[in-house]
Length: 284
Image (tube, rainbow, N blue to C red; front, side, top):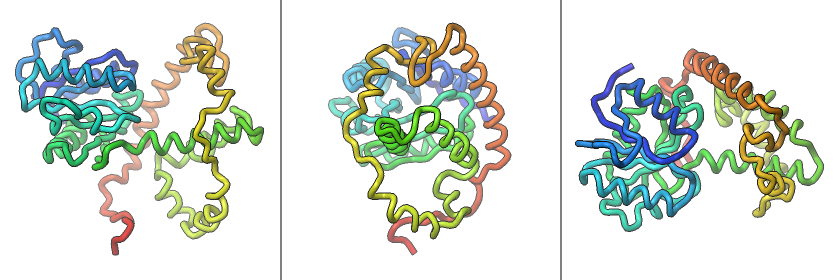
């Protein structure tokens, strides 16, 4: 893996931060974990916080007081528009979205979000170091919000609808996702898989099915009940499933082992270098 002399700053209390720090350290980046550390000349500041607009803007303001005008500030943001985070910044053009997923040091995922305000070279720089230094397979969204959570949100909304209305239970949903999509998604992704299976057939199915899919705008009662009961993570013993003491550690170990193995398998069947031109609406 190519090493980098660039400096990186990791900030904010967030579970995913540890994996990002491993990823950066492995690539030869210098990592500081708080604003009190001597920063020196910093090319890139990576901000990872909870999904709270005020928290993120406060951190951005604090970083800007400590770094030069040339420092790029990359912020994780799933539902908050990039333009909102750029508001009142000293240099709005250097604020860019950067979303990771767990385990950050193992997955190929990296989502870069740029908009019309973002400096033209910022996204290109992040995309390059993500490929050459962090062993990522990144994509750049040139809009105001990312696509990862929109895609996941659509699946979650339909799953909630099916459970809430008695079509399926939680176990059914997980079996359907794991045993079908779970097999092909690391290989192909939804759209290439449709090509493999026959795009026309999917078109015929979706023609009638689209009108039946959930359009709910409110979270279902069974899910809000889980949240109210404090079922935030496995280690708290609750969620969609119930967990005994010590079970969360077992699942964490399994996830780490699976992530390493699936990483190797995905690398073996890597399509990112293929000269395939995807279909774009309005193109020939």
